[in-house]
Amino acid sequence: MWGGRTGALLRVWGLWPAGVRGRRPLGCNAASLAGNNSPQCWNCGGPGVPKRGDGFFCPQCRALQPPDLTRDYFSLMDCNRAFAVDTAKLQNRYQQLQRLVHPDFFSQRSQTEKDFSEKHATLVNDAYKTLLAPLSRGLYLVS
Ligand SMILES: [Zn+2]
Image 1 (cartoon, helix red, strand yellow):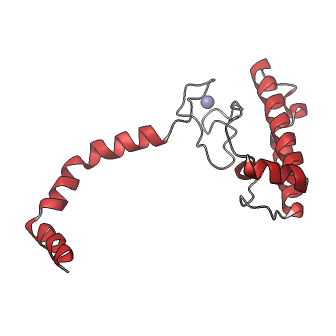
Image 2: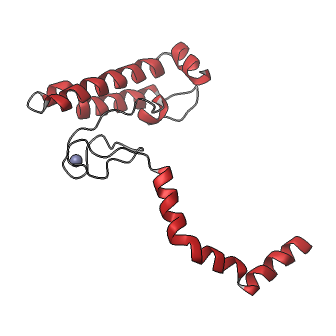
Image 3: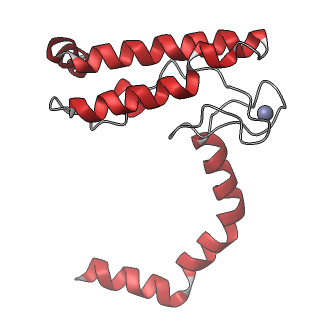
């Protein structure tokens, strides 16, 4: 009761909003810099691609970006991090990703993008195989 009252009083006195308002621009900036460690685009130097989602391509120049090798297989394959996985959904996602990054689609592109597409395809293959089989999925979950 007293704790809640003190908080209300602080708000009434304007201590709390003033502090937040005063620091907000800097705090926001620092937070977004710290939280967003996605690399710049290797091709155009643009701000790069969000870590989440299907941002395999630079939003500005459409160049294929290097794979994020630290990315969780479940997040890559758009599955809940649980032992029960919808294998039909997993298969769809696998095909969807292969259509995005398959090396065949990069035969006319730069060597850098060819290399990245090979790495992406390998990663997607590994993720798919790991999550498809219950044994390897279980081992991956506990690892
Ligand atoms: Zn770019």
